[in-house]
Length: 466
Image (cartoon, rainbow, N blue to C red; front, side, top):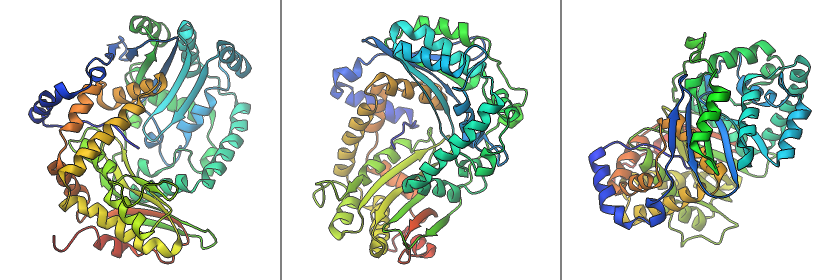
C-alpha cells in the first residue's frame, strides 16, 4: 500500500522542484488548494473544493488499536460498531432511514493508528451529514443490550477475517515484528476482550482519545470551506481540548524484533508468506525512497501476462523460475516505524527458491540499482498516487490522514517534486539502511516444510562480495 511521506533536505528538494516544475502537467500545477482552519478548541478543518453535486465529509481521529492496552484491545473497533446503534437523539432505525432518505452513504473504519467516520452525500445535505456525524460521535447511548448483540457481530467478522489468509498473515507479521507493543495487537482484539468490553470501557476510550486537537474534520468534492468551518464550530465546537486521562492517551513506542511466526498447516494447498524489514515512519527523510523501492519491487501474478519482460527484477526472477503464484511488495508506514517487505503465495515445493530470489532481489537494491530503474519507478509511482486521488472520498481520506500525519496536506506538485528528488543514490542509501544486514520479521501459514529457517533468511540479507 502506497503512503505519503516527508523527505528532509530542503535545499535539494527546492532544486529538484525548480528543475522539474516546467515539466509538470498543468493539472498538477493548478490542482485545487487545500484550505485549513483551526477552531478555538484545537479542532482542525481541512477541505478541497471541487465541481459536481456530491461531497464527502468526515472526521479523522488520532486513535486506533495502537493506543489500546492488552486489557482493552479491540475497544476502538468495538466503538466504531456501536456508533451506528443509536444516540440520545436517534434510534438505529431513524439513523439508517435519514441516511437512506438523503441517498447518502455513512461508514467508518478503524486502523492501527486512526479511526474514521465519514459520509458521502449531495452538497445540499452537507449540513445534515455534519449534524449526524456529530450526533453519533458525541451522543451515542451504548445500550447494554445493543453492546451484547454487537459482540456476536464482531465475532462473525473475526471468523470472516480468519478465512482470509492474507489478513491473518499480516496480523501475525505485526504480532511478531512488534511483539509486546501496541502495534503488535490486532485491530479486532482477542475473543476474551470482545466478550467482556463494557459500556464504561467505551466511554473511557472516548474521554481519553476523542478530544478536539486529536481530530480533523475533512471535506472534498462540492464543499465550501467557510460553510464546513461554520458547521464544524456549530457541531464540534464543544469538544474538550484535553482528556482527563491525558497520560493514558500517550502512544506506546514501537519496538521492532527480528523474529518469525510459522503456522504449519500441511493440509493447505499453498503457503502464504510475508517477509519484512523494519523501515521508516511517515515523516522520515527515507519515506519517498522507500516508496520508489516498493514500486521497483512491484507485484506479479500468474494470471497476468507480464513475466520476464517486466521492469521489476524481483518479478522477473519469480516468473522465470516459477517460484510463486503471486507476489507483491508492501510499505506500511506508521508514525515512528514501518514495515517494508513482500507477501507471496507459493507451492510448498517452491518456497525455498522463493525466499532465495526474494532476498536476492531486495539486497540487490543496495548495490545494483540503476537510474533507468528508478526513473521508471518514479513515473509509475506518480501514476499510482494520482489514481489514488480519483474521487471525493479518496481525496477526503488523503486530507484527513495527511492532516493527522503531517499537520498539513502535501500538494500534488510537492509530491511530484519529492518523487523526482529520488535518484539511484537515495534508493541505495535507504536500502543499505533498512535491508543490508538487518533483522527480518516473517509470518507464514500453510505447508511450510521446505521454508528455510530464520538463520538462513538472516544470512541472505547481505552479500559477501559485490
